[in-house]
Image (cartoon, rainbow, N blue to C red):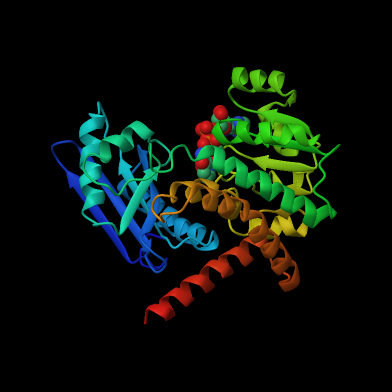
Length: 346
Ligand code: NAI
C-alpha cells in the first residue's frame, strides 16, 4: 500500500508534530462525500511511521464504508498518534491532538479507539468541540455495539434457519470485554447455550457463573461445537488455519477486521458459513456516537442500531442472489452510496 498511498482514494492525509510534547500523528480523511469524516483516534507504539501511515489509511477507509452502509450522513477518517518511546505526558499529548483535530475545522470528528480512553478525549476536547464518544456526546458506545450485534445475530439466524428462536442453539463468544459481555447478557435470556472464552480467566469465570455459561479455553473457542460463533476480541482471527476448523453455521461478532485477508470471505462462503461483515454488524457504536453530530433523538438512534438487522438481511440476500460474499455485497453498497453522494454534489 505504501508504494502508492493514493491507491485507496483518500481526500487528504496530514502529518502533524509538536516537538514540545513529542506528539506525532497522522490524520487521514478518506472521504467527506457523505458528511464530515468521523473516526476514532488510535494511540499505539508503531514499529515505524510507515506502519502508522498504513494503519491510518486502512482504518480511515474502513470508517467511510462503515458509515456509508450504516446510512449515516458522515464520512470516514481516522487519526493515529505515534506513542513516543519513554515517558509520555498524556495531557500535553492530547491537548496537541485536540489542536490537530481543530485544524480541520469540523471536517474531522474523532472519538475513542484502541489506546484511548474517554479521559484522553476529554483533554482533547479542551482544544476543540470536534470530539464525540465522551459524556454528553454519545457516551460509551459498547452497549450499542452489543445491541447491534445481537439484532444482527437474530437476522443471520432468520436467514440461515428461517427462525430467530435461539432456544437450544449454542453460541460461542470469543472475548467477553465491553462488547462480548454485554452480548452474552443479551443472549442469555433467549434460551441459547453459551460458550465463553477470554484471555482474562477471572473475567470469563465471573460472567459464566453469573449467566450461567460454559468456559472454553482461548485456543478452542473458534472451533467450538456451536451453531453461532461471535468473534468479539481481536481482528484477523479468520484465516487459513481457523476457517477449516470453524463448526458454526453462522459467524457474527463485533471484532473489527475479522478476516485475515479479503479472500477469507470466500473461504467462509465455500464452507457454507454465513458471515456477517464486521463493519456492518458492529456499527452500533459509531451510530450511538453520532447522535449529537446528527442532532438525532436517542429513539431515532436506537432505531438506526436496530436497522442493522435489516441491512444485514438485505446484504445476505444480495450476496446469495449475486453469488458473492456478504462482505463484497457490503463494499458494493458503500461504493454505490458514495458514488451517488459525489454525483449529487456535482
Ligand atoms: P475489550 O478490550 O473491552 O474486550 C476484548 C476482550 O477480548 C478482552 O477481555 C480480552 O481479554 C479478550 N481477548 C483478547 N484476545 C483474546 C483471545 N485470543 N481469546 C479470547 N479472548 C481474547 O474490547 P471491546 O470494546 O469489547 O471490543 C471488542 C472488539 O469489538 C474489538 O475488536 C473492537 O475493535 C470491536 N469493536 C468494538 C466497539 C465498541 O463499541 N467497543 C465498536 C466496534 C468494534
